[in-house]
Length: 500
Image (cartoon, rainbow, N blue to C red; front, side, top):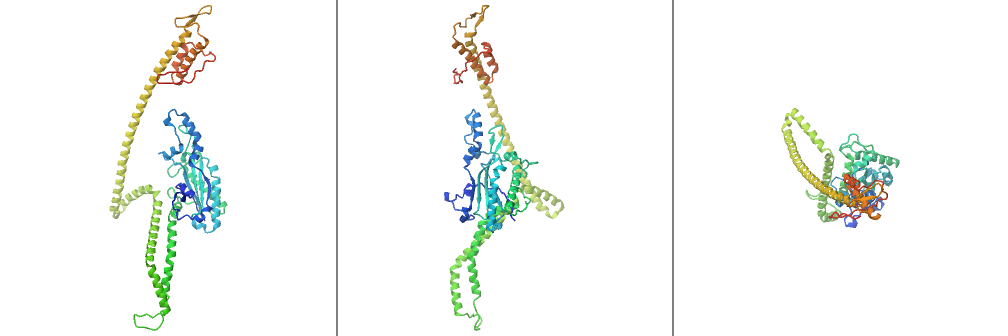
C-alpha cells in the first residue's frame, strides 16, 4: 500500500530535462541511465515564451497607459525575476505514489507511470489559473515520480497589470478560500489537499492501493520529510552495498582458514600439525591477505565513513522534523519551564539558566525591533520629504501651465476680434469696430473659429474648463457652428509654439 505525496520541488530544469552532459556535469549516482529512455516529457515550454503568451496582452495595455518611459515594463519575466515581493518565476511540485519498496514488480512501475500521465492530462482543466510550463515523469530513479512546473495567473487587478503572477490570489480565484487564514491554513494548503485527493483517486482506478492521509506535522507530513531523506541517503546505501560486496570475499578467506584440517599426530605443546596440501593453501591465503591488507583498511575506513554519513542523514531528518514547529515549541518550553520552577526545586538551577537564555533572546529581539522602528521612521520621513517636493513641483508646474493658458486665452480673444468686433444694424448690415475686418474670406473666418476651438479643446483636457468657456464665449462661437475646422494635434516646444 503506497502513500500519495506532493512535496514542493526545487524547480531545476537541468535535473528535469537530464541535461547534465550538455554542460559537462556528472550524472548523479541515484539516476539509472539505463532507464532514462523510459522517462516521459509531457510539457516542456520556454519560460520567456510562456510569459509572453500569458502576460503579453496585459503588459501592452499597461505600457500604453504610461506617459513616462521609466514606468514602463520592458520584459515581465525579467521584472518578476528581479522582484523583491516574494514572487517566483514558476513553482514546482513533485507528485508520487509509493516508495521504492512498492516497486519491486515492473507492473507496479507501469501503473504508477500511467497514473501520473492521467493526472497531468486533467491538471489545467482543474486549475485554470495555473499554466503548465513543464511536466516530466522520471522512471530512472528509485521510484517513478512527476516534476510539475507551473506559473500562477491572477486576474482582475485595477492598478498595474490587470493580469499578474500571484500564487495566493490564483488559488483563491479557483475557490480555495480558508475560513481562518494563517500560515498553516492557507489557500495553497487547501489546493494541495485537493490535488492529492484527485491523484489518489486516479491511482485507485489504476489498481494501486492508496494509504490513508496522515496528520501533518507542521506544514508537511512526516512521510514527506522522509521522502526528502530517502533521496538524500540513496547514494549512501548504494555505496554501502558496494563495500559489502568487496568485503564478502575476505570473510570467505577467514572462513577457509578456520576450516583447515588440523587433525594428526599429537605434537609437543605449542606445535600444530597440518597436512602439506593445507599448508600450501594457507600460504596462498596468506599471500592474498598480505596483498589485500591495505585494501581492507581502506574498506574499513569507507565503511566507517558510510556509517557516519548515515548518522548525519538521521540527524538531518530529525532537524527537518523539528524545524517546522520550532517557534511554537519554544513558546511551549517557556511555559513548561515556568511551571517546573514552581513545582520542582531540583530543576531550579537548570530552569533559571534556560530562562536567562530566553530573556536574552527576548532582549535581542526587542533591540532589533527598536532598530527596525527607527529605520521605518527614517524612511517615512524621507517619503514625506519626497512627497512634499513632488507636490511643490506639481503645483509650480500647474501655475506655469495656468499662466500659459491665460496667455493663450488672451491671444484667442484678440484674434477673435478680427471677426467678431462688429454690430448688426436694423438693415442687417454689420458695422465693424477698429479691430474688426469686413472683408475676411471664409477660409480666414474658419481659421479664426478653429483657433478658438483648438485652444478650448486643450484647456478642457488639461483641467482648465473655465478658460475653455472663456475662449468660446468671448469670441461669440455658438454650439451650432457646423463643421468646425478640426485642428491637428499640437506640437509643443519650449516656446509654447502651436501648429494648426
